[in-house]
Amino acid sequence: VTGHRLREAQHINKSLSSLGDVIFALAKKSPHVPYRNSKLTQVLQSSLGGQAKTIMLVQLNPDATSFSESMSTLKFAERVSGVELGAAQSSKEEKDVRELLEQMASLKDKIAEKDEEIRRLKSLRDLKPRIPQQHQL
Image 1 (cartoon, rainbow, N blue to C red):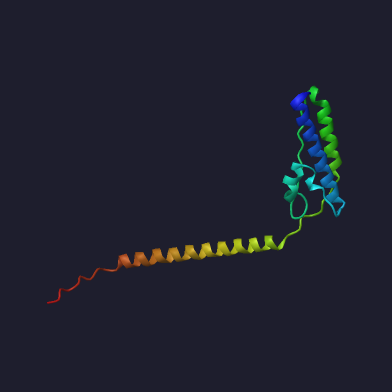
Image 2: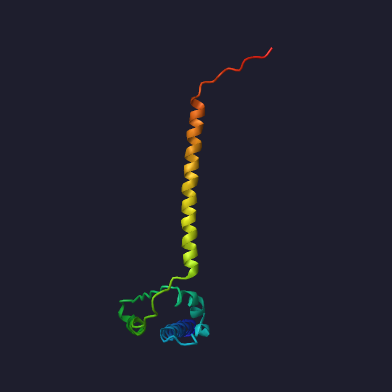
């Protein structure tokens, strides 16, 4: 690979290397996590560690010409596969969101009950015999 494709491949490899550095810093509970080392890690910062659940998928090309790239991918996957960032912890915000969702469900149920009551009252009103109004003299 030469030219533009070579530079692109170098940037991809640098980004993946930075991602590996971030994953290992998180695993070691390092006081400094190098998120700013690449655009990839900056974008993924909110998805790594903390409250996030992270899964890594790798894709391999079975073509023989891609053997070295496939091997690099497998080595990277092997390197990060042993890293355990710890269980995601429930945050207060998640609890608040859950409570709000429960309140919404309860309010929807109450609205449905009131709608049914209105429908029933309207049908009762329609069943009452009409009393003609007497003309006043």
